[in-house]
Length: 482
View 1 (cartoon, rainbow, N blue to C red):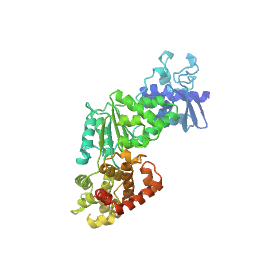
View 2: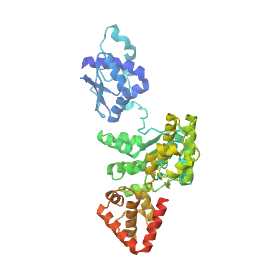
View 3: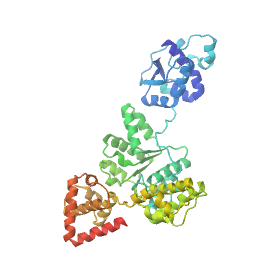
View 4: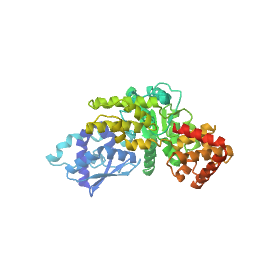
């Protein structure tokens, strides 16, 4: 132990020179060296977060320096000392680094002596006095391609775009939170990234945290596991803008919802902006606590509608210009962009991916992109796009047609004014999608597949005798397939 402690004392000088005095004072000086056995260097640390930071940022340099001094280690280990102070070390033996000062050594060992020759009164301050630097925000990486310049604005998304722009400008905003919802591939994530990128550009000194709800839950569970929830709260409640993508993921997860609720309240009370996205409106997310649903509806709730033909055409034209800049030799026949905009209507990601695939194929085989190539190269995508109707669209359209709330269709209410439209929606879900009976039942408030079977039989019978109901079904079918 004494030999390893001496080695730790010797490497502190070059370690400080390598990482800088401020980082050394904040993160290395508070370490309490324990031992180095079986390739593991053991340290005492104030908190789990502290140990995780040292492990993530300084492990390689500590391992390298200790190994070069004849103590081969390949990993670090930490135990929590909390507020407990290390055993007192006599002033004559203390070097300020949590280990006994080295005894006089031959000249080769003294090569770092100037860095360690501090008088006791000049020793590094104790951990409580060290001003730790701002911890790294645990957010997800931002994609620079997802900026406002690359976002094509059309009627279905102009309100969402305007609200996102307002938040990104950083001025007074009359709504908090901004809640964006809509189906997959309609541009919610693009707008989230664009807000974060623009806000960081305009206010480089402020903190923007963007992450998925799954990532939020993971960091919270990790803080519970390591008994370090204080660090979690400090990080998430110190940001200027918090952005959580796919918040429906935390539905049904009690502890995570509890922490999200308190984090949300803390930020709003500090007048910090919150931006949320989901695949459904707050009132339609099953398993979400009422108090969270209420908070999410406080601000501006914006529905990012499915794209129309003109918007898809604009997106494809913009994307094609980007591809032509990279592949100027590729030729694109007239009518291809219009064909894609007409045939692939449910998902912008699939739409953009189809164009990328065509340009890649044309560049590799040296062919012109025409309708024959489209049919050949995108056969699977075009087949899938024929089944574009989703159960969510069916539920929304039936609710609108019968002037009901979506929650009514998904509820346990058995009144005929609700039960009959619900059965019609189940019938359309079976007719227009490839979903199984159990899956349809789950989407309609967690019902059993036998309930779906009963609905199908009932509507099939009524279609033969009730002309009004048959006309309703045909009208709904045409609207959904349009």
